[in-house]
Length: 227
Image (tube, rainbow, N blue to C red; front, top):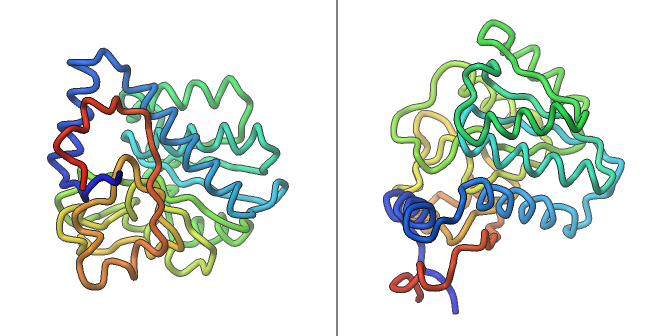
């Protein structure tokens, strides 16, 4: 059985129910999401020892990227994590992932607004074989600006294969349209189910290949969402 595409509000509702009704910690869901995406990348033939850059935003999508980085590092990949926010601006589970990575010795840095320039991002990505987009998740509802916009544009001009986590950053989850700008991913590891906007004409230019990652939501919570 397959799950039908989900809207932004439906995704939020499932996350909230998992925590409130099923006592399922959000950190567990994040762990399953990040590990599942990392395993898909590994199983697609990306070789250990290749160099990857994982660009993380300050919210849960960035936390997913932090989890992916840890598992890829454990499997022998050369990963570097760059957070597009200073540590004191990381929120919730993303802040927890920062602490885990710091104690794990995995290379990571947090770039201030002033440090996030097109030239700095171009240099960072030029030294990588592939990249992961963990900047923005389904909650985005307004045009991207500032350092996150700068990072999206850098990914798009880098020419590197890009795996987007959940959806390409900058893409509206419901309409499938870019909010100012969006990452043009090689592939998208989307969590739980495809997003409503993925079927919109032109959305595939941003998502690339779409693979659905199971994050461990109980079957009971998904009643009513099966195709």
